[in-house]
Amino acid sequence: MRAASVEKRSVLSALNPKPEPYPIESQETSRAANRRGAARTSVLIPVRLRPVRFDDGNFEDVAATSNVSRGCLNVMTWRDSYYTGMRVLVSYPFTSSHKGTGWEYLSEIVRLTQLPDGRFQVALKLQFVMQSSPNPRLIPL
Image 1: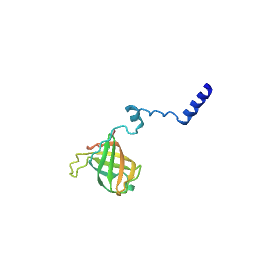
Image 2: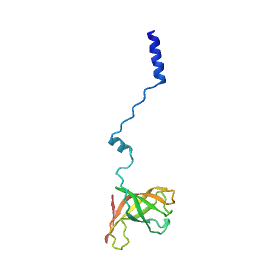
Image 3: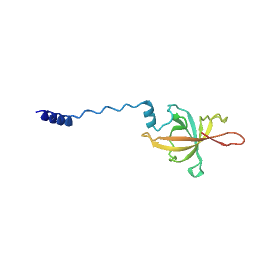
Image 4: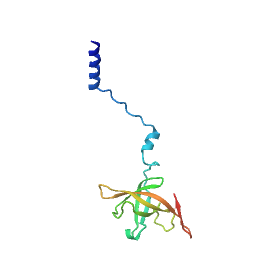
């Protein structure tokens, strides 16, 4: 009789398995799983984008950021001339006056997404600061 009850219990436990508890992630674990190293902030800042190579065209695109983080920008634009891996000069923040109050960065496009309204979201990784002086040089970030 005892063997039958043990067998019945094992059959019931096989039919109704005990639910697995959900894993609890600490903040460090979830941050490590996230590829972003720095937090993003949604902010609209005007930027000017220009291609580095002449093969990519000769244009200036004035657009606005959708969000920023340390070393990265997401820019919304209508221009479809960009591609992943393209290197661009980014004036950030950009002002239309010729005083040049913003910085200019050498950057690379790491992601390009077309939005449903026809615009493009361009993800830029800032690589170097272009120093504006009589003897300009690149300063790594």
